[in-house]
Image 1 (spheres, rainbow, N blue to C red):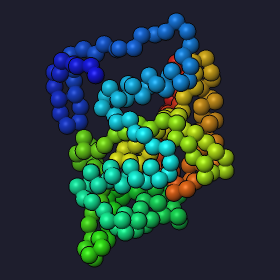
Image 2 (cartoon, one colour; image 1 turned 60 degrees about the vertical axis):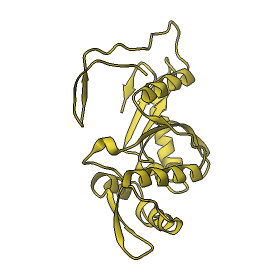
Image 3 (cartoon, rainbow, N blue to C red; image 1 turned 120 degrees about the horizontal axis):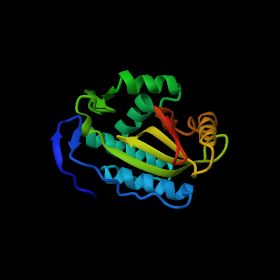
Image 4 (cartoon, one colour; image 1 turned 30 degrees about the horizontal axis):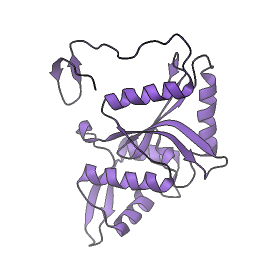
Length: 211
């Protein structure tokens, strides 16, 4: 990981004297896989954890662990099942309700096994550095209308909040947009619907990037 001469640092930002990119421009077009590897390495160099998640069960287990760390609380199995079902992945909720939860209702109430209520934060908006950032790639969703494999997803405290779709250099960026549009229609809602929490979509072909 690179080291920098830090001029000023606050809870919200860091100012360095100089930043020199470690990445050189290649003479040929990058493949999609190469672009993805470089992007993930860039995120890891900035402190993102590379998550190894290959199933819905892994995704839910990781979410539980990240929320336990954020809230300094260990769920019992029954508490987690109830909290996940009622406060995260209710079958009666869709994109609108999940967006509202992230934007304005990010502190949820857990009814503990002993009957006492406890606040559980999905995101810490007061101390943003308490939030845990992970990067996940090539996650396969098989429960939708069609099987899909997502390029790169950024998890915040275990929730998928940013999705990035990549195309190799030279391919029209519109193809990445069409792919995300298809995912929203065919698979983000599948299984527990956690990908309906995505708040930002990014498309890039290494030359042009939009969000």
